[in-house]
Length: 107
Length: 404
Image 1: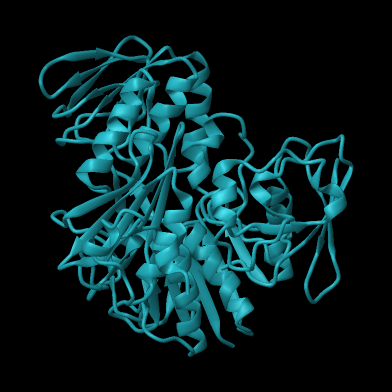
Image 2: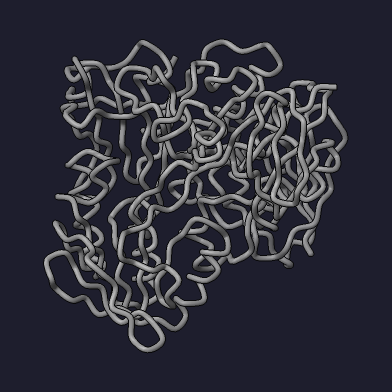
């Protein structure tokens, strides 16, 4: 099972396991990772599962979709080059570990 | 010790418990959950749950309740409220004494006279159990008839169509999503569904469901026409679950009536989410909304009220619906006669319909235009809104207008 490390702005990181084929957002919600809301249930509709992916993993992920791209333009915390919506990042056994930063705010 | 009892473990109930703890509430919290499952998110039930992702998405992880000292009672219903003693009685015979009671009982799928949902092949979607049954039925069904062209009916129709079923949607009104979107958006969405092979029949209600030896065989329309079906979905709206409140003598009118603090006619009892109706809603708002946003925003507000730190409740309503390739996002609530202006690329299916009342922006419906939606939510939260004159300018963009 792929491991996701959520680095928190002001507390120790959350290290959780997720199932391949499911999303990074689900791994966060199922494990009560602070700062990841996922209010729309993973439809890229609410932009409350924004994360900053550590640069070394960016190229390993599926590219950003059009809708995700637009939603990222208006997240509560500023968009960076390494911004993604957690619900659109699929976990994959080919990538056994991924590190992301949780932004200071989602809503 | 203070004891908050929350009846209902949907989006509203769970968010309220979480916000109480986030806000430093030190008393006891008990949640009364009718279903046995870990409380879960409902929106995927009519979408991903029927397709690729049958594992329910929890509202919070399993450890949340223990870690947050929230006692979660599952498989139990609240059967009565004794307001004098401040007690809720439960189906297992227990009684819980509360200092504050929060009713987050939600809504139930509306039923139709003359239709027995117990028949094999006749479905509704409200709970995880409903969705699991429907998911199993979808694997075998060939012909689906959906009664009601609201969000739920069309979301299901899109899923069923994609699975290769022959799908007919019956709608009693004059257009699809009649209660939810403008005529322009409605027309575009109807066209898109028809182009994908879904049959839409307007001005057609349900008269009865024909049941064969084992299962549903057809739907008989109000017109008398017979629509063969081995799967029938009734998606004709929902009614607030306000019975418990009514029986306790609280004021109820198609929803539990609440003031701007979300308090019912008994100040020790609050009501939030689908089951609650604001007595004095903002101009143009219906007072009772069925949405995740409304449930969670009211839950946060109720927690603030209990903690003694709240202003009056005010939140921009927003909604979404995902129907096949159609991604619809709505910010605000439009009046049925609000004039509209459409911006964007209608041909390409990426546009927004803006509604105005007295030249003031009331609602933005965006189809495959998430940037417009997010900008609209910010604009509707404030007073600096574009008028019809602004938005018809050739280079107008909501996002630019909303930029600080």
